[in-house]
Image (cartoon, rainbow, N blue to C red; front, top):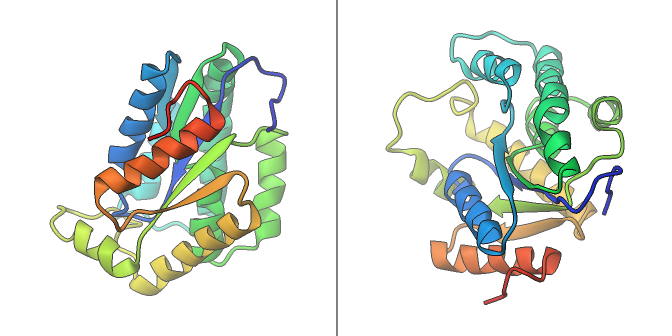
Length: 216
């Protein structure tokens, strides 16, 4: 665990491709932690700050035409503001932060999806994050077919959601590669199963980080 000089706060991230239930389960994680008595901050990337939300709007707009390197730099610009204004202050005050995506998403989307080198992403992470890393990452994973099926009824798709199946295949594989490299931090959760089973696994992962969260 990298504490980065902070108090008892913990940093939890939730990752995965579209359609794996991130939004539902981020709320579940936050509620479980609050039940255990923790002060919790829920946030997201890109976003979380005024600047970050403006960058998010630009990145997700279907009308945006953004080169891969520019996309990566915009993501890290939003992340720098997010860390300075939200994440570090919350952790330093002892709060638990639950974040929808973080740097693993950069390796998955800009690395795997766009084909940018991991070395470039790691270099930006060192500059922006210093020694700060998530204490726990919940990687919700499901086959591409299930992801596409769950998104079928949604309205207008954003710039990323409009990408091809090949793109999302590369993104998913990059996520799985991250999990293989860091099994101690990243908990791979089969999100193709019924929600109750997915959340049982999430609860066990939280219990491993915090004994105040009971296992099922």
